[in-house]
Amino acid sequence: QHNPHWWGNRNTIVHLFEWKWSDIAQECESFLGPRGFAGVQVSPVNENIIAAGRPWWERYQPISYKLTTRSGNEEEFGDMVRRCNDVGVRIYVDVLLNHMSGDFDGVAVGTAGTEAEPRKKSFPGVPYTAQDFHPTCEITDWNDRFQVQQCELVGLKDLDQSSDWVRSKLIEFLDHLIELGVAGFRVDAAKHMASEDLEYIYSSLSNLNIDHGFPHNSRPFIFQEVIDHGHETVSRDEYKDLGAVTEFRFSEEIGNAFRGNNALKWLQSWGTGWGFLPSGQALTFVDNHDNQRDAGAVLNYKSPRQYKMATAFHLAYPYGISRVMSSFAFDDHDTPPPQDAQERIISPEFDEDGACVNGWICEHRWRQIYAMVGFKNAVRDTEITGWWDNGDNQISFCRGNKGFLAFNNNLYDLSQDLNTCLPAGTYCDVISGSLIDGSCTGKSVTVNDNGYGYIHIGSDDFDGVLALHVDAKV
Ligand code: LM2
Ligand code: CA
Picture (cartoon, rainbow, N blue to C red):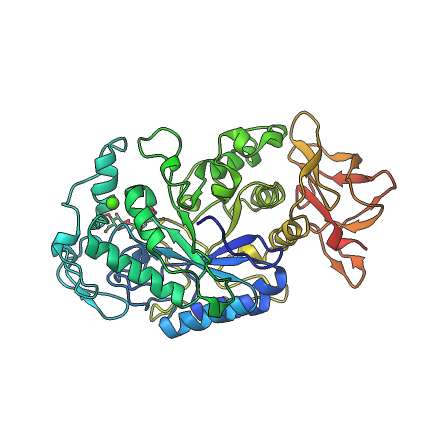
């Protein structure tokens, strides 16, 4: 279940973290479809606990499988899926199969009004009772398979996926979403579930809904969140044949490289050469909603120059199933999404350039990022050719004869003739500007009959990357 069911030549997923369904529907029609995005990962859709201050992570504490959250209700969700599918944008849902909520004093009331008593493992909205959960224990040894898979991840009540009842409830929930037209799922905390149990669940799911444009017998796309740095007992290899797996090593290594901790010339062997999963099994990202909040190598929107360069490399190098993060501004781990005084999530607002202004970051609306989504579509099915580097932090390469990229992460200028592999002509750099009414609003490069062009990326240029492709030829 590795096929994401993309439409046409599209090939990038965006995670619209904490967005409301009605806003995503609008975004599919007005921005994502026209810009060639392939799909959206949406926040969890099922009812969750209400935590004080409304941190984003309350949505990782389910109460029932009713489709009512701060992002909207079932009707709004269904309307979003239909409208996005109509413009060729697929929807993938973040699903919580490992656990329900954590401890809560007394009776908890969820976002759909359902009551539960998490301390007693009583979730009548499903219903689940204590016998549907593993006995309570804490994960202290991450090399102990039993603890990792059967104890409670940060105290969240741990479901027993080997039980027929639990399996049937999870399958019913996922099938309900398939019926509504989704293309697949991000499986949260997959490492904390036995792969045999997941295999049973995935293989029991319905085919995708043909009324939403999916071919007959299409299987739901699965990408599993498995954090594997290579030194734990439970490994990504147990999951990779069931569906794609999040490749966290990609995120760390690309952060290292563009932070300057590793010379860009080494990126020539990017992908499996770095010990990553085979391309078709790897869900790749510069940052995700968890690791963008951690200190360390991973880049996020707070380092925009390096972040844009890393994203350009991510989308230009033919490796993995690409996902772009779209965040809201945060100060610390618990910062809630933009919300009003009644704790309702607010809709993004845009300035005249289309950038988000009211607490939403919307990296996917940064020109340097959406232009690379277009680049990836334009060069689809071509190989890397013509690799060049200066032995350090200046690199360039071609994607067949359809696209060309150059990066300068040195503290001196890149100024020289380079092989772009492109047909002769003038091309707009889609990073510094765009092709508008037949001319470039940013840099342009003239390519001669031998495919060479003069490339300049100053060390103090606004962006350290330049990108040319055949769909932005003057
Ligand atoms: C994930 N993948 O495996 C998600 O990507 C990640 O965002 C989730 O953690 C986690 N697993 C569980 O689904 C987040 C957040 C945690 C938060 C949990 C549950 O990063 O901080 O934990 O969601 O809401 C919070 C408190 C924690 C407390 C727990 C249970 O921060 O201190 O533990 O709730 O009450 C006692
Ligand atoms: Ca578990």
